[in-house]
Length: 329
Image: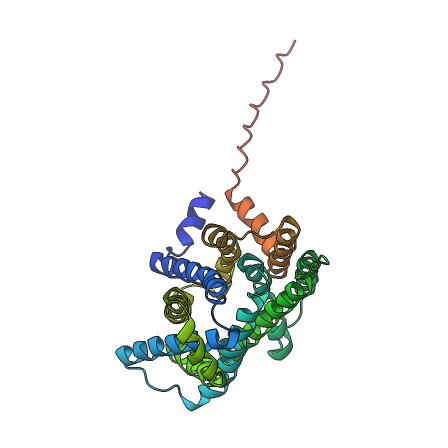
């Protein structure tokens, strides 16, 4: 009876929000593979600019269709900072990092982003630094060190692979800083406004790469150019929009948990499409990175609670019938 009451009290699952979140995670996972492929023809800055141009055009068209104008003045500080860091620096650092390491490794390292968001939130937004957060940081960065050591094996490419890990960590830091700076902007502007104009700011920040983009477009095969456009339209414009849609209909914690699936999808996609699979030692380090994120967010406790909720309740012990009094003699 108690379990039936608990089940009835739970809010119904929003299937559209679940579908939107699933679409977002798949698109973001595919971005790592598309970057790895397009990065063979485009330099990091040129690829970032081309992606952001396609993303900005798509997002501004969505704003026009929805009749959403410029964000309010109070939203612009967050739009500017997140635009430069999240859309600009993040994309260049990730593109460069993926020229040195495979897509699966990059995804596992970049996914320490949520733990850095919690760290920056505790520091800048005065949300506190609980012990489990500090423990998670230690585990995640131990994993990043393991990945770096596994790729720096003394071979001719060891130094550049270690540089790739550092660049992916830089991408994670700028992603986290962009999310934290975007939070105040979302109090004043809609998610579509903040995303669209953040993307425009990132595009402007990457304009110094316009000469390289023009030169490389002339020599790049059509498949690489289409990959770049795909990155702007789907993982950037549409996936950010569906993320905002899902986030408005569920909790941030539940949405954040969905990103745990991204690295596994990236490894599967890169193996299928590019023939790339991280080595066992590298894979172990990546798993440590993700385990640190789970620890920092109370993931182990959540798993225990989930098991406890679904474990069968102990069967009631039947009461022993009262013993009849012995006949008197």
